[in-house]
Length: 154
Image 1: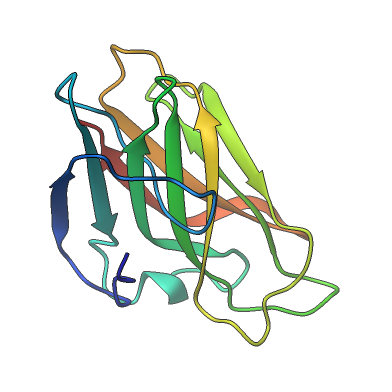
Image 2: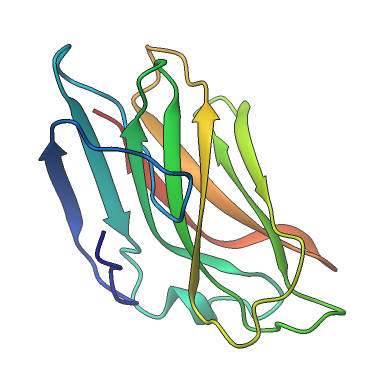
């Protein structure tokens, strides 16, 4: 899948059938039809979001795809202002409107030579009545914070 550039204020909905997920840096979304799957992607509606607060990473793009087992796969693009072994973006998570954490992708090393970067996580269970999730980033030293991204599913 193409990577969406920084600062795009665009919500892109891509419908595809038979879209395979290999666990790489692709985002997952829900299905609106029983015979096919749909992918939903978004980029930050806040141009320059990656510089909102240098204490935290920013989520600048995301895509969700419904997997065969009824779970979701998320591909999330993160920008981290400090990316050293001592301090870096060490996770992103998918959170529901009520604050429930549905899934987390732990990042085990800095991505100093790869900014922004995209990582994926599949197998994330989201209740059927949830239509919007928020993607948040975490900094190794400062915890959760920075620019988040709301993603409408289905």
